[in-house]
Image (cartoon, rainbow, N blue to C red):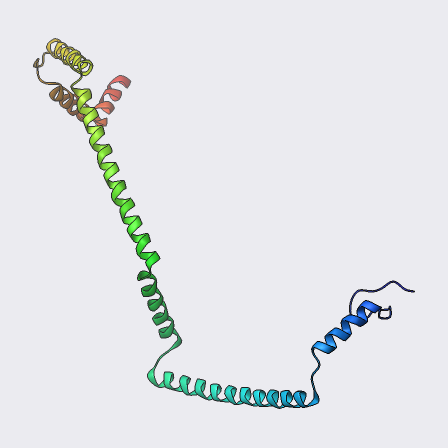
Amino acid sequence: MEPRQQGLLETEPLQELDEEMVSEVDLNHSITDEEREEMNNELIKLEEEIVTLKQVLASKEKQHAELKQKLGITALSELRHNFSRSWYDMQTSTAYKKTTETLSTAGQKTTAAFSSLGTAISRKFGDMRNSPSFKSFEEKVENTVSNIKSKVGGNSGGSFEEVLSSAAHASAQDTPTNNLTEDSERTC
């Protein structure tokens, strides 16, 4: 005997198990000629109804297209309407509302966090400025500036802010034209 093949065509004859399975299937699904005739008639009726429904649908689709054309409804306007409707539906959805609320809450918390961070930094700078170390540094700078001013011939005294302001003003007045004049004097 040849080995049994897989698929539709088998080379071996039916075995006893196969014969039992076929007989069970035939017994369970046997249809009388009368039932078969009735089923065929019902199938024909269904096919005729399907054809009729397709014709009615085609007629309705044609009528639909003509009415849309008369009303001036274009594919673009329909698309725009569908998009607007979808956008509205999305905005009114529970998920969208929850997401919006969550993002709003997160934004408020972030704003509060940055605000408290800014307050904390300002407080720390204030604390630092009032610290003995900074006061000592400020006094030393003021003394040094006073000494320099007195040696150069300027007014002595003034607060730390005034000294810094005058130093910034002096450096702003040092323009490139003064540097060019100095360079030209050196080359002569």
